[in-house]
Image (cartoon, rainbow, N blue to C red; front, side):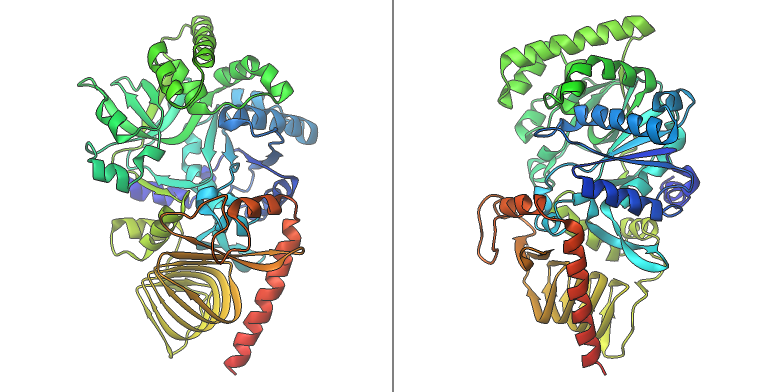
Length: 518
C-alpha cells in the first residue's frame, strides 16, 4: 500500500483544489504566492487556487484560532479577487487545505534564522525546477506534495497541516464520516522509558481510540503519565500526527462560536488543549491536565463548559452522537519529523540507508540517480552519498547528502551539506547550511553552522549543536548574537535584500573555486 501512496504522491492530479498558506509577514506572503505559482505541476496541481495570508494577530492566535482566522482572511481574498465563496466551494465538494508556517522555529535555529525566521523555507534533500534551473525543495513544498494524496478523501472538508513533518500511510486511505477527523499512527508496542526518552515522545500528542474510530485527545505526556494510563481492552493508544480535517458545517459553526475572538483578534487557542480535549475529555481530567500546565482552574472550567455547550447544541441540531473521530494511517506509517535539529539531521541521512525507509525517501523526493546535476571528477571519491547540483573537484565524501554545494576540496562523512560554498570543506557528523568561506570551512562532530546575510550586518556565522540544542536567549561562544536576538533582528530586515547579498557572495566564492580548478 505504501508503494501505491508513494506513486500517487508524484501524481499532481491528486492535489488540493484550494491551497491556503498562513504566514507571519507580508514578505513571506508574497514569496510563497510567487513560489507556489512557479511550482505548478510539481508541488500543486495546475488548476489549484493558491491563496497566501498573513496572521497579523498580536502575540499569535494559536493554531486553532489561527486556522479559523486564516480561513476567514482567505475567504475575503477569494471573494474579492476571484468571486469565489470558500464555504460554497466546500458545499460543492471541493478540497481545501490550510498549511501553517507560524512559529519561531527555535528547535531548528540557526537554520531558521538564516532563512529569515521562516521554518517553512528550510531546504531538504531534493530538487525542483525553477525556470529550467534546479532549486532545492523546501520543507513546506514537501508537506504540500505529500498531503496531496489526501485530497480525494477530503472533498467538502477543510484539511489543516503543519509545515514540518511528512508521512506516508501504510493503510488504505478512506473517507471519514466524523465532523472532526484526526490522523493518527497507532503504537506498535508499549514503549520503554528509554525509548520514550530517546525518541522524545513527550513532545508529541497522543489519542485514545475506540473500535468505532471515536477518540479522546490527550496532551503531550511524560513517561510517568503514560504509564499511569488505564486503557480498556478494546482501546488503542496512538500518536497524533497533528493534522486534522473538518466538515463544512462544523467549520461554519466554529467560525460563529469564535466570531468575537476573530473580529477582535483576541486570545490564543490551540487545537489540542482548546478544541479536541474539552470536546472529548471529562471535566475533572481536562481541568487537571490544564492545571499541570499552569492554566487556572477558573479558565479550564469555564472553557470546558463553553465547548461542551457548543457540542451539545451542534449534536442536537444535526442529530449526532459523536463529533470526533480518528483515521489510522497504520502502525507501519513512515513518519519523518523535520521540526528539530536532531530529527532533521537523522531524516536527511536516512536517504543513504540501504533499507526500505531509505528507498521510500528516495522515491518520495524523486531521486532516481544518486548524483544529479553533479560535476564529476576522477579526484573525488564518493561512497554511499547523494549529491544534487554540486560542483566538487577532489576529496572524499562518505555517508553524506549534499545539495547545491561548491568546493574545490571536500572531506566529509555522515554529514548534511546544503547551499554552501568554500574553497575547502571538512565536515564530520555535522550540518552545514547556507554557509560560505573564501577559504576553509571546518564543522566538528555534532555541530551545526548556518550563515545569515543582511544589508545591515552583512555576512554573519552562527553555530549550534545537533543534540542537545544550545540556549535560545543566551549568546554562546562563536555567535555574535543570541538566537533570540537573531530572530528579533530578522523581523526588522528585508529578507529579499539578504537573499540577494547571499547569492552575490556565493557567486564570488564559486568563481574563486572555478579559478582554482583551471
